[in-house]
Image 1 (spheres, rainbow, N blue to C red):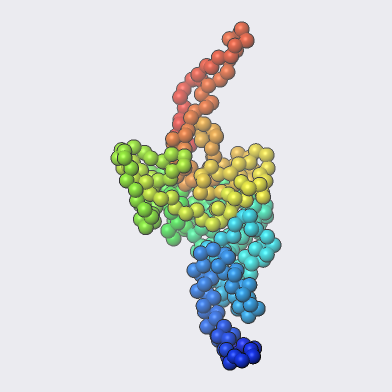
Image 2: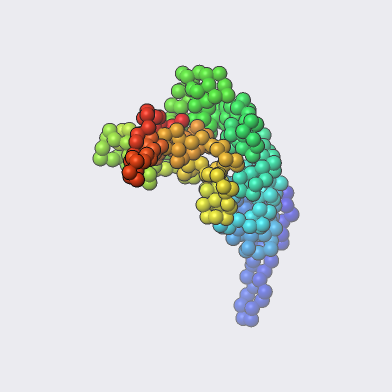
Length: 347
């Protein structure tokens, strides 16, 4: 327990009685308890940082390890435009206090943004050991792609094992990814029936997660309403319903903003995952899967590929490479269709 403070009074003012300073008189243990509640429930980093700027005492107590260990995802949701050495130090303080969300966030930032794959993997592993589901899933994606290494260093079995652990703990993307692995026999013995069950389960969990969001009925009950700017729940879109898009995880939003704002530059030939809710970049050319039809989109995982196909790409995919330019001998170019329509669906 922290030692309590004596009740202090404000300086005397001529003609006015002394007024007690209630903030200074608040016992340290009670102040730390209140700050823990704030750090775990703050809606954004500024809600917590403003407390640090209030006075020296609150600054000291707010940086207590017990408070930092309870900091929630939104408290750690630093935007790419606000990234600085101070933000980096704050995340490290939270990690030292045992905060797994901070270990995952800084691990992703170091791995993908700061090009420090070894340190980033180590931090994510630190969170994964404590069953942090997002860290487990991200490590599985890294193993599936061989990110930060050569193409020959993929470890599909390790990817499946990490993905299965995250799926068991309820991570929806991991459930979807594992379903595709089982259905395709990718890194695991093929089991089409079990794979399809997991895909249905992922859609069901996605639906249940979206229930608190507004559910709107469209005018065409049998039409798919999921254009390039409209997200919809795949499970309900065929019945004419659109469910509000799930909020992007702060870490994925940071990655997306980091590269799209130009604060981080991708090397020539590298691209971001085309699923708008991901933000992961390639670490080597042709690391991610590309659509076999149009070749204009690429995905870090089967989960991102399948979800983006249902939500957006299905309405945009055009087999652009089905045509070639041919000279007719008179200086006039004509379009000649290549043989075979190809597969316009996801790889």
